[in-house]
Length: 474
Image (cartoon, rainbow, N blue to C red; front, side):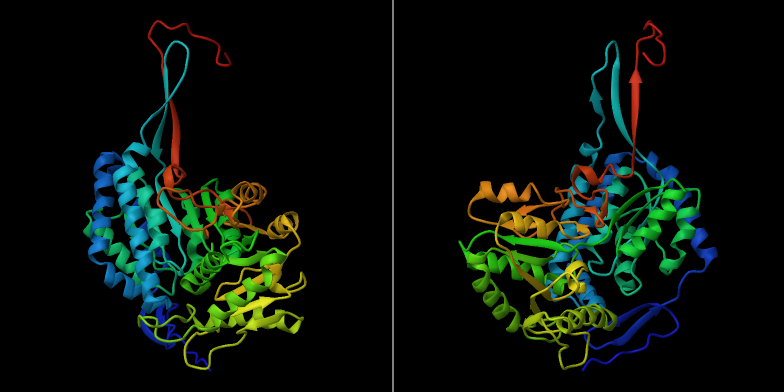
């Protein structure tokens, strides 16, 4: 069975989830050091916002070049710190580099003044930076998540304080070094080595103008409450329990492939992974059998080994939390078609598991399962599929599979999620907006929407000197 290791004096540490061995620790910043980091970011803001947007974008584009140059080093660092299969780590680094390149090339155009029609003069919406921003980012995509927040805001002209997950500190260090080497001035991008309990101190600092968090609902509620009380702009991405709806048995091999690839990317530790598979009767039995067969054939091993297909979860704690949810379902009558237990070897491994017979009194019905566990439901028709898909507190991503595209779009239009993909599992691209509704949070990242979330969308009206002065209310 798995073996746990107690981390030393600091909670900011690399613990290899493949072996549960402590690799490296980092000291946490005290309150004085935190305040100094905030001051440095505020001091740097004046010069950074005055830097031409083309030059800011060039620094981000250079970061993209450096990331590609260091891609193998970064990928292995991700695998070391959170246990990701090396091929998945490479995919993450590649996506992050493409995001940096996207904003490095497209950012100035996305921030161009937007003209408005006005009688007798001119009017534009101009995008100006707000100031110091705090980003609180998770461990599951320690390169991509940082870039998703930092790239557009650096081009916009904001300065960044980045609180990385305590379990992936070396990825955080590597990202800070990347931006420094790309020519981003001191204070413009700064790591904050501190536990989550000290984030309130940063948000409450009067020079901090916004906060973006990707994480748990508990953390999001806490950050959102402080930000709201201090009238700070916030963006929250708080996870999901994404539905994956199968409308027919046509091209079932491709549908199963999409379900397996989507569910097992990063070993299911993805907010947009398809966690609830909802299948019509004509496809249900074959779909369950095919997914279970694929899950049962996975081989646990070193995630840095190209031949490994089942990686550990990010930590021993994560593995036990997932098993608590699985045991709850099984104790209350669910069936594990395959899996359902820990892997009998050291490390934070959990068997790839397919659960059926999930009912509302089970935790798996409403909670997000963050790991290689698929829940499969049988529904009578499209209406029941939509009702079950929407019977969740979450609303991040969703996927609909069907050969009749008009039918698939009709189902997609009724789903209460921020993103819907038809005939493809929910994914992420630099030019596509990312975000959810309901308990999955609010705001959007990436695309043209992401670069203006923390902008002052300032109206500038110019009237001729001989224009008639009208009453303020027209």
